[in-house]
Length: 282
Ligand SMILES: [Zn+2]
Image (cartoon, rainbow, N blue to C red):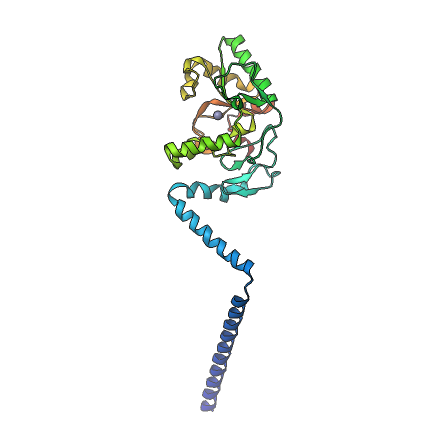
């Protein structure tokens, strides 16, 4: 009996081993057939990932981290009505013409987006000779005139427009020259990548005054003009877009000179709330 049992076990073992061998052989043959029959398209697809793996390795030191973050965080984006079309640097905004459009380091304007209603800032003092930057969308311009007039009439301050609308291409050259002069890291900290500048919306403008020699500087916040702007811009539909201490949320250091048009209602709500545009939309 014992012998029979033993031989039965032996037989089973042999059978199982044989089956495993057969299975393995079948798998091997199948894989070989698949490899032989790979259509050219599939081969191409296989090559792609290996290329992608190489890219980040080369750029590791400079920009891998900031590039990855937006991609990962993107699906949580604040405006669900804008389907996330992903790029290397975040999503492409679907309705760039909206007055409350949110543009930042994760939300890109289409590279061909030019606002349809840009107008020249003909009735306010300007600093730069480049006609492109002396433009804003018409609603933003009307509000800017009111803001500047109020500053003059209510407080006797002369404000000056320095840089309004900026095209994708202008921002691209600015960014490139920044990278060349100061390196990628500094560029990513202080300059917007093309498509990520609020200036491309035609709804944002950098303003200054004589006390600053018409330049842009954080000391604008300490001038009488700067203080007046921070306390009154919302009445005319503008907010200080990059407030102090909110760098991590907005992605930009404090810029007391950069004001963004949102319409009076929204600007007042945001001013009262003390939130950034990012936080408000969350
Ligand atoms: Zn600006």
